[in-house]
Amino acid sequence: MPLPRRIEDLVGASAAVVFIVSVTAFGAALDGYAQARHPVALLGASGVPHALAFNLLGWVLPGLLAVMVALCLLLRLPVGSNWRARVAGQLLVLAGMAFAGMGLLPLDVEALDGPASQAHASAWMVWVLAFIAGTLMFASALWRRSTALGVLALACGAVAAVCAFGLQGVVPAPLAQRITFASWLAWLALALPVLRAAGNRS
Image (cartoon, rainbow, N blue to C red; front, side, top):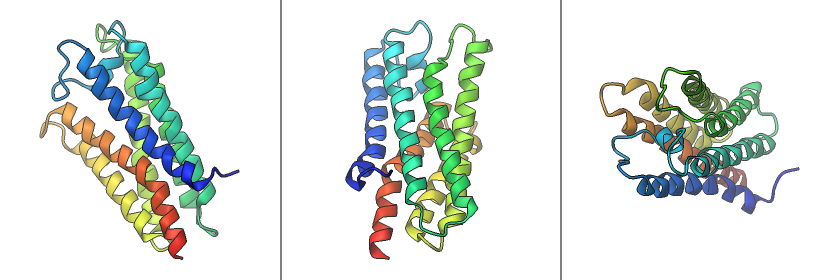
C-alpha cells in the first residue's frame, strides 16, 4: 500500500539531509579530517571515533530511506509502464540496500587490501552501478510518459557515471566521490515530487 504522498515526498529529502548532516558533523568532530582530502568512508572506518554512529546515521539510515523511495516509485509508476521501468526500480532498491551495506561493512584503514575493506569497496561498487543503471533505465523507459522524471534520471545517472568512473586523475577522488553522492541525493530528494507533479498535470 502506497504511503501518503506528502510523506513520500519527505522520505528522499530526509535521506539527503541525514547523509549531509552526518558527513558534515562527524567530519567536523574527527580531528584532522578534511572534506576536500579524505573519503567519506573514513568517518566509519574501524577504530575511528564514533564510527558506529556514523555507519548507522551516514550509511544505513539513508540507505533504508532510499529503498523506501525506490519502492514508492515502483508503486507509483504510470499504468502500462514497460519492463525497463520495473527493472530500473528494482535496481534502485538494490542501490539503497548496497548503500546501507557500506555501513554494515566498514572500511579498515589499516588493511586497505584486506577482506573488510574489499567488502566495503564491493558494496560501494554495487551501489554506484545499480544507481547509474537504474536511473538511466528510468530515463529511457519514462521519457515519453514523464519527461521531467526522465530528464532528472538522465542527469543524475550521467553525472554519477562521469564522476565515479570518468574523472579519475582529473579531479581529486574525494571531490569526485562527493559529486557522485550529490547526484544520488538529488535523485532521492526530487524523484517522487517530480513524478507526482507530472501525474497532477496529466
